[in-house]
Length: 149
Image (cartoon, rainbow, N blue to C red; front, side, top):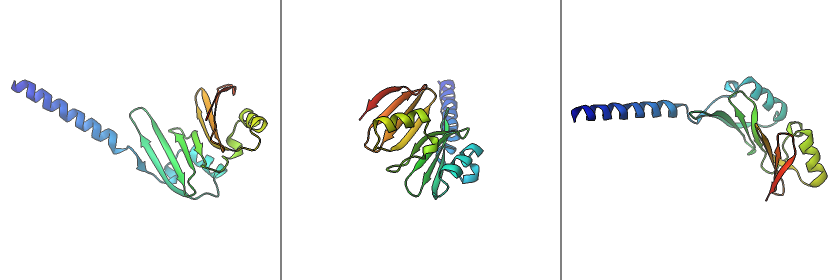
């Protein structure tokens, strides 16, 4: 019985130590110069006139990313390599330079009076949200897959 208690205590200690190690880096504020170079360049090119409110480094067990929040409410998410994965400009248009030409053409043809206010890119799909609230999903070849309101 004593042996089982000791084993249980050691196991519990191991779980607590592992959890503490994982949580220590979870959601911490970082400075601009701690962003990957690719993310710094992206911000300088596309959000040069925006003031950064804060930058969060989010570290999960298998996923690490950066979330840059600007004072105007816009937000950009980057993966650990500094590639942007999501740009949310609230009610303003996202920078035109980051929208693939096929998506921009589709939106211009079918929703001429609407702006893309949010865009995200995953390895096999793109998703954009328009200023009227519609969400458009495209596959990796920029073919429309779904429209969601």
